[in-house]
Length: 326
Length: 224
Image (cartoon, rainbow over all chains, first blue to last red; front, top):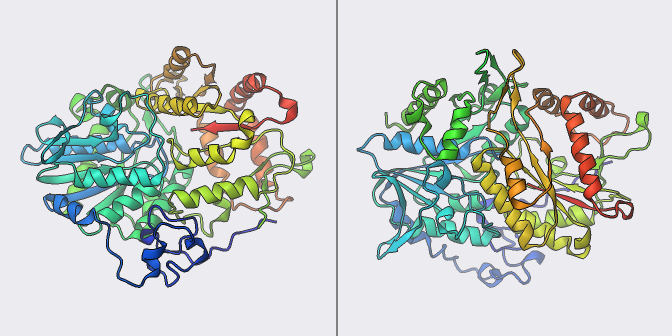
């Protein structure tokens, strides 16, 4: 028989401080500061005293910086390697193709920052000025911030636990001189943990316009999408839609399309229908997408004739439409 | 509280010898998200190591999330008393973007002095079911090249096996600990028939050879 852990009262995940102990009841709970788990916690005194808890001191600065950012979009996925960063980069490039628009890409995948490589700016470094850290610019209207710009070498591992990652994310939001932005696209690591909770908490006041979920067609990946949708519900983020990546592959030899990651349960489309989430579209697997990412060039510009380019552009148009910008 | 592992093989084929533990067994619904920060994940990992009745094991294979963060650091901390019996396998896909992260992973193992048994290149090529042509969907050879450059044993390449993808999807039946349930045992039998099974056998054999002192029951940690 399997012993199932009966979950004790589940705290609102966004009310658990990042440095809280294992069984933190959440700062909003009646038990805050009084539960057994609170003994020894750095925040115990603050929680136990009934004084209104002060918000994170970084929040006013973040609100200030984000006041000049019109739209904030998160890119999420349950599994790793499904194409989040590639999609983020294409989205950034597509937004920036309009010279009137200012776009920013923020990479909060602290342990595996891929954005600098995909955008072809891996060798760049961050410069700081009186107004804060300057983003690295891919082109005049596309600024990027990633922990990848801060490492001495791309081989270096960032072995950080949650609180340290949260600290950096908070700095990315308050210390980076983003300027006036029409779009800020946030690339996240896979899963639903520290980085995701932090970005949601930090941007609560400024507001997040929504999240785009990326998946591959097979059931193993879709299960994690269900968790991702569940997460968005829990923390109150609007799901803008679901993108199915690596959907079908056209053999360069015989031109026949086959399913590498077979959608044995109907793929993302069916999942979208079941969960009431908008299905944004399917991007076929084109080996040149991965190549473009490796060489840091824009796939959309390099291969405008590929069916994958058409799919990407349709999805991006649809996204703009949903956001009310088209 | 003591957790009992879930057994995936058994009666018709002799004594159960393959068991597993995952947070997936503890969720009420499969769509539930686990929104935990580091300390809570840390506690779960500790419980998996200390409170699960594993019994006598020859190998414990640990699947980890991507990256080098809470889960990895917690595992290393909790397993520190048996550090001499720990080792890692790094799995990557062939494209440069993935190799950069694999390098970070390798740096991590070096920093925490965790021996690396070798590198596996996954999704290395795809055989068109129609004409049999091999396409390198995520390019190829990057893993082998990295292994050579870093002086790591290269354990092998795994092409994308659509049969295996389908098989694993179909395996998503309700997790039961009912030992007479034949469904998951069937899975093992069907797995043996996939083309990946042979390749995995070769990789496993290489691994076992590099593992020191198997008789004293070695532990094996799988990174990334």
